[in-house]
Image (cartoon, rainbow, N blue to C red; front, side, top):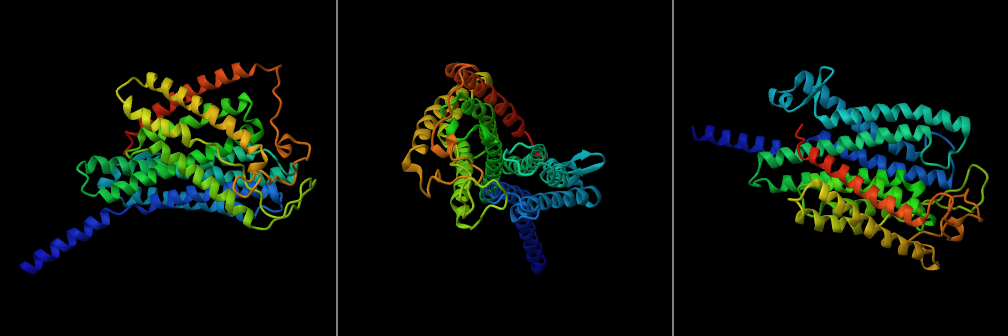
Length: 400
């Protein structure tokens, strides 16, 4: 009898240990999101340094590896839940076209299909039109949508696990698992923010930091992801953590990629390139993010409309001086080194360009005044924060 009781106790302990683990498909989704982001920045660097010699570049393989891992693991999870899932698993799943599974898994599946669709489209585009020097080419837009869906899937998967854990363990008995889930969610948000920042790169380069277009695009896009991440997170300093992950990844790649040799294989070659050229120094989003983490807890009882105005003005009011004066530094001789990498240019960059000369592009007075453009940026920041609050409120309720 005593041996039987011991066996039952041991079985319960093993069951508790097993159920306390993080589901493997959630880890696969986060891995896929990371692989895609690293491969994406690597691919841009490859285009800037080498051109596009073949579809089968290591950077492309890293991108599609992330899509395949996230898509296949999510597909297997949906099939297993649909045909062999327990009653509890099916009860907390969503149903789509007769299939049951976690909501985030469906996002990953959709994203994987979009990414695989973009691959032959991108190959045909380059074979037909040659090298594209812009990020937002049509096949890249399809690819970016697929990537965004996988990253959203990773966020929703980790978010649902975080929210369910908070509901099931309000006393914090399994604090270690709770901390890990909160960190995984913020990490997934950091990957999505990185993707959004890369997509805005065309309009947020160093030579545009004294133009309103830089702040209009930045204020319209980036607060959305930072505010949504912070609103749905259950950890302290979530906005700061999200932006720190974005900056850390970008800086790491900016410092690591130039260690690898590379030379142009397409013309015209206007700059001498011997190693991979990295993307520019990341945007200083961590400065307004710290303000977000200080403001949001203090105004948690205020209306979201009041909060979005305060957050939007804080984002604009801090990003503008930070990037405006940091741009002066990046255009100075003091930044032309390994740390800030402003002395590295793509092989196709003309020596007559403002980027090469470390100069700001002149303002075109025929469009609108700089002051009017900055006023529009402030309004866009408030609107972006409002959408971020709405999105974050929805994410706080996700448990499937």
